[in-house]
Image 1 (cartoon, rainbow, N blue to C red):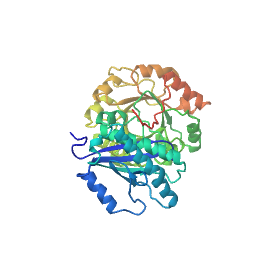
Image 2: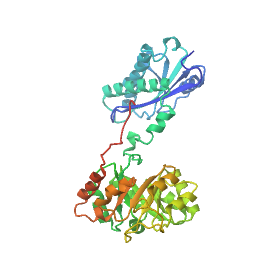
Image 3: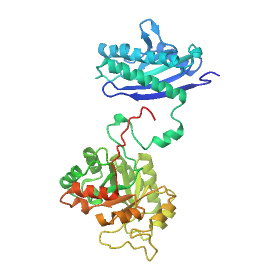
Image 4: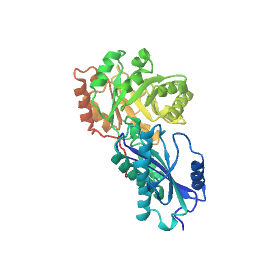
Length: 406
């Protein structure tokens, strides 16, 4: 049976460091099928700045299977052309030929196959050695991944929340490894807030909350200002939405909020619209239970559940009250919240939490510890935050990964 019995295979790889970093997108398939047609059309219809070229190991020695190289970045001048026609072209062609020699592509099938390789060359790339080596490695990796049909869907689902593209410029924390410390910034004074943010430790375990008073004074755009100071940190917009759920969730998403919060006192329809809109904009939804008599009953009524439920005691309330119902903890029945949400939920606890209550909250099942004045009003903000992280037993984990192998 041929290596590719129908259609074509797709591979991708990112290798190296800027500015010579190599990014390869590759398709391989039969000359008689879609890849062959695309190959011929690309040669027949070149585009200015993106003229496709045959992959040659050296002039007059094209590789096999026949390979077409398509520049991703516009070739603007002779220097750009030399990088593409020299180290990049040779590296891609050599990688394809070596793949045949190593058995990745069966030698008997090389005349039946065609390869199209889309090549990224950074305009600031200067080191020809690096350009060659990175593009060689990326092409071989992309090709082997194509042949292996990597990744399968199970790998995609396993990895999708662990990291993000290196060139996005910041880390992304998807709250998949609790516990987390949420620092509530309820102070409506940006100068003080900025000082607190700068003093917080750089930790994947920290969430920054743009508190309701802060948002009321400066608008939800204050989330963007926080992200400018801490682009890698999860920022929560505590809107406590009671009406126009989809509109306010969209506003939070537009302001780059990673998490957006609504009140559990809102109408059911408002809450459901808020949750659905959060899914559309890629933010997590949080239900704040402040003054909600029975959060579990509210959750039962929701057709769609929030990503996070914050069991919130008012600042001036000593013990969480639930109209005489039995409680797992002073924050409420965390176990029942999980069961109603089919365990697909993070539980945050908030309201006057001090260092001595951290272990109690974690033992009760909390995923997120929300702390305000115990950190923000401390003389040593850095030390106070580190104290909570230490009490939580949190280790810093760098989720920023460029994976060339799994």
